[in-house]
Image (cartoon, rainbow, N blue to C red; front, side, top):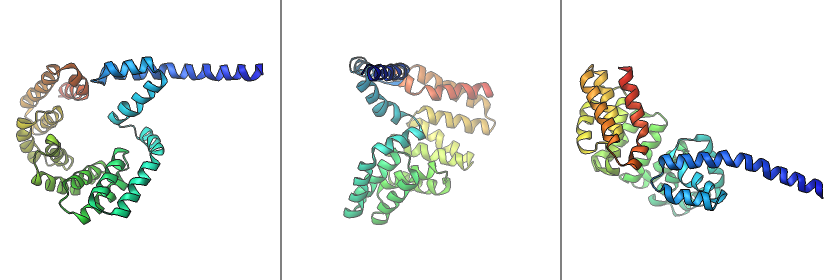
Amino acid sequence: MEFIISHFMGAVGALSILYVPFFIWMLIDCVRNEPDRGIWIFLMIFLQGIGCFAYFFIRFLPRGNFGFLNSLVARFQTKELKRLRVEAKQIGNPYHWVHYGEKLRELQQYSKAEKAYRTALEKEPENIQALWGLAICLENQKQFEEALQIVTQVYQQDPAYKFGDVSLAYARLLLALERWKEAREHLESHVKRWRQPEGLYLLARCQFHQNDREQAKETLEMLIMDIEASPSAIARKQKTWKSKAKKLLRAN
């Protein structure tokens, strides 16, 4: 009996050693990135493991691009995916195929999501949600030509769809295809309406490519100032673009 108890206590101690750095990691991430960090910190401290793992799956994972972790999460969502697939096949309307595609895309299963969106579009060719989902899948699979065609369709339907994300994707795909002049013209119009850090960063890249160095530096400095003038929660979310802007300035 004493042998069992000692081994049990040893296992608990080992788990505690592993949990502490995980807890600290989640706490630091929460302080740096989470707008509602007060609530999450409270949950992590007072609910211990439950709160910490809840934060990991609900907030941390969706923010990042962690392929292996998303694959792990997918294992726990097999039943939901199966349910959505069955609903899509049995009912067969575009809504259910899009809903199934959204879940697959969320888990970065882009090839399968692409097929789901294409099935929805076979039934409803102008379904804007399916078109947008398909475009994202194609972009992530580096099928830039077709992705640009699809994004153009969405943009023609609704230029303001997803609050400027479609317009930004259009510019991103032009750059991926090295259509620099078109990308710059589009971005100059885009940033007047949606002053997103990514849009300014892409515009600066175009300006550097066309040897308009002074204008490019001004654009990057504007990007940095915009982020620094933002509320702290927004500034934390945009810190990657601030870092990229500084790196591009140093390189030029």
